[in-house]
Length: 169
Image 1 (cartoon, rainbow, N blue to C red):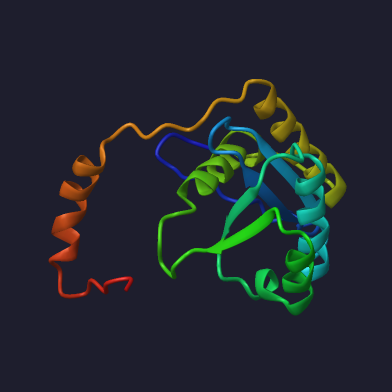
Image 2: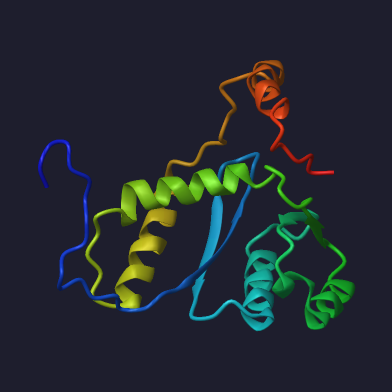
């Protein structure tokens, strides 16, 4: 790499596969529970829900904010939720920013652990992800907003005035 040039992949770059990371963020404590899976189906999501349920104190109800991915709405997931009353899924509105905290965590994972990493297998990649989560949880702290809602809304208003803006409602 040279100053002024962006990083690129070399001609011999080899992709060794992908992994799905399911993660929940405890917004009060900043702790993350994560699990890497080979696929992103209802079976893996149910397995992850069971992991979260097992790792959370039994006296707490679990309110999980999830996106509208079909995996989260599968009939077997719905049936499991009916039997496990302390777990509640809340689906975000399309194009909303309610998952920004989780996205921020994924950004940190990418920036501090994965970017420029060399992984010769999916297993190696998953181990690096889980090491990051473990290190994060040792020094966990909640994410905090650095701007007030009023400051954010002032910055968003000009964009809302453009002709291409579409209201999320």
